[in-house]
Image (cartoon, rainbow, N blue to C red; front, top):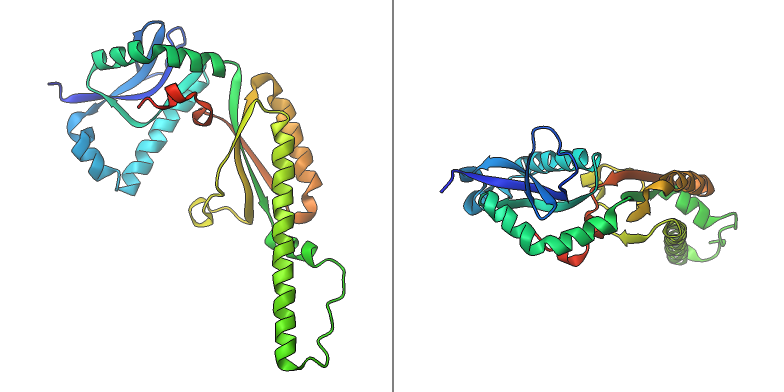
Length: 256
């Protein structure tokens, strides 16, 4: 038994050049980009231990994504999940032979198309300000301390509800407009503020599959949408292109 395993990054067309310092295993006109890793550090027991080590996991994930991004700049890729490992070259070739149709279908689907991410952030203070509007608050005179307290609580609740409605409206409008420029879209839960470090309220976290030739239109649209929602302190973040994890056919996404 070899003392090495093969860490797999993605599947490409065999004609696409691999990034420097990355090996390629070919079969049936396809190629898997791989690197050799020590078996003792990446066998099942070691992985179970290391996956609970956040610094290790972050370092490995960054290295994996860096290779994917370099491969993506050279051609179409089908990204493989983190920690996709094979017990030698023949295991990789056997996988390509068994799953080749799914990978070829995925490559056909993704060629000439790119995944872009969009996050919409709103300023909570401006949301509350817009929710309150210019209406005078109902007078609390003559209500007594208890009545005035209940009135304030009702006003605060109504402001929160209206602010939430405004935020959902912005998210729905932005998503709808972006979908008009996309072939497909996927919505994700908002990111945790403590983990991502973002400011404001994230009301949309989505990915869009776009024809590469329409990316300039997408950029222009995002700029226009940000201007439209400036009164709510909107910040619309467009990032990409990303490895297209969100738009893999089921038979390709299941590998790994």
